[in-house]
Image 1 (cartoon, chains in turn blue, orange, yellow, purple):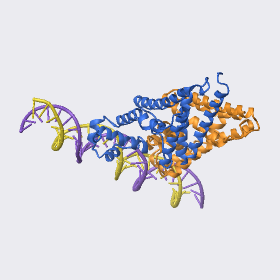
Image 2 (cartoon, rainbow over the protein chains, first blue to last red):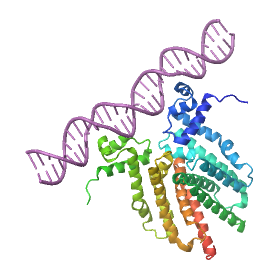
Image 3 (cartoon, chains in turn cyan, brown, blue, orange):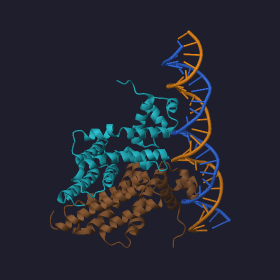
Image 4 (cartoon, chains in turn blue, brown, green, orange):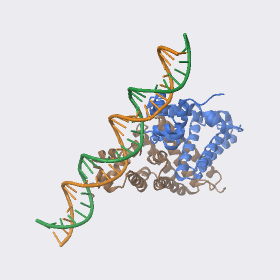
Length: 204
Length: 204
DNA sequence: AGCCCTATTGAATGCTCGTTCAAGAACCGG
DNA sequence: CCGGTTCTTGAACGAGCATTCAATAGGGCT
């Protein structure tokens, strides 16, 4: 179908991997050039500067959220609540695959870039919003299995919090257990909410 | 009582602020020197290199956990469960004080340092462990107000997860609301646990 | 005062970084 | 095959970085 990827795409793909593996500041333009087998001029012909590469990377994460992350995680899982934990299971797999060195690319960049350009910060926020939006779809689909008084937005953000906190601790301790216990606590939280809704279905 | 702080202490204090404000990689030795009004030789007389400054900073956080963070937060709060939320309230205050740019120094360093020296990683882990240990004291003091089957270690780590995730999202969106909703979800979690224990006090 | 050890000075070093740009190659419509 | 545009080359540049070190100052002891 499509031929060899163009220069821009090659740069973005290489930068995604490098920023994820080493962080933004610790990734040099030279790193990107050597991985893509390009010369400096080619990169600067496509991007005005390093920060624009970062922006393209964040846009790629935003645009590929479902294709690269959510849809594969949800494949074969129909129950909306289980979809939430299927997404978390995908992160567990990533942690194991990287010998507990995995870090969420967005979360790591969000904490690394202390004085980020507004454009960059907006893209970080948009990535979080997209992720939370995917969880929101599940919560909406769960309908009245959740108590009517529950703040679904807060709950969806809480799922992201659980993922980010679990990933952070698992990596720092080099032990998936920290991620697993976080997910388990979240599971208890959902179980209690679902039980409460089942107990008194019409109460606020 | 004590006179002017010695060179080592001045460096560590300046580095704590700078690493927190700009991150480790983005803080130069020159930054530390200009803030402390020292010369390069004085710093290298005390520390072999930049990483050793980081190690001293992490040791200072570890050793000052109660004095600088926990004890002030718990002052006037006796109920063990409320102490947990008093600690979180202190982070909320820090977020507001910094116009929603606050980042947990340990969490930020943990995500920034991708290929950290084992000594550094251990110190990051120890800082997390100390924080979780403070929460564990509360959970132990809560005694049978919590259901007997609850994994207290997991629950204490979950409190840290809530703090880190809330701080991360609040800073990215520049909005305390993200932190507040996370704490509120954790409050619901505790309320449900406490209610369950009160309902059937002797059940596992 | 003389001595020794510790502490400080600050210029110099070598390296890496992001970025530039003049020169040349490749491509394409006519 | 020409003329113009787009893309690529890779050396060069200046700034900033962590680190070094010979020279100098200070402080305590006899």
